[in-house]
Length: 266
Image 1 (tube, rainbow, N blue to C red):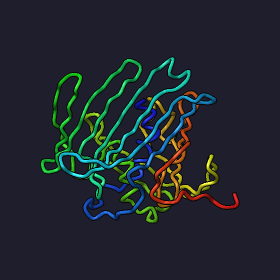
Image 2: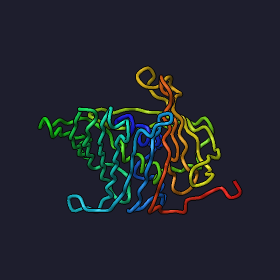
Image 3: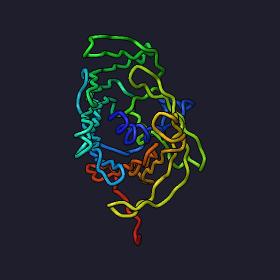
Image 4: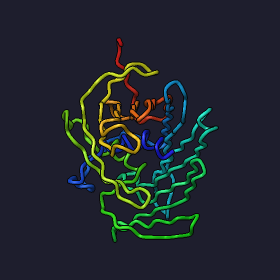
């Protein structure tokens, strides 16, 4: 499921501000609200291989009002018989500035288990990682503009001015995940129309550059389509693998902050 969540979440979150931007003076767009839920299905060829969802709700953490983002992923059907996956990733961040204060990872992937929490100290620029299964705690150096695998998805939607993008622009971001900082970059390719189950949608097409050789055929093996509207939803992802390809599609949504726009007459 690390790969499944990578496709649904980690790809779109690369569409973020570069590290040159000032976090405290970012623009603030009304791109989402508590109560939002997005659901995706992943297909490998003709097989429905996996399911993933993203939900957002408001609650309190250490006396402060925060938003709690939860991502659930699991294999389905025949894929579950061969490789059972049940993953939960969660992030807590302030309501006014998307910046992770706590991350939770509770996963089971074909016998591999991980239960861990990470808390972020921006005064000392440290991330405290706690492995619950091994009862081990360790600190890691971070910087003030770090994001995690879930928070960045909301960070790009709330704080990035998409009108500033031009074709072939490269965007960079650092993500703290599983005790390491991962740098990513992605290229904006332009605007195009995409046919979906909801109708034709105008989207931004993006290409993340990933490490080749382990899963993907090359550094250009993934393409992502994000709605070119106020919601900025990743609506389709296609990943070319060494054998075949995986396509992820948005199949349901609710609680959006803005209207979901369909291209009329298509």
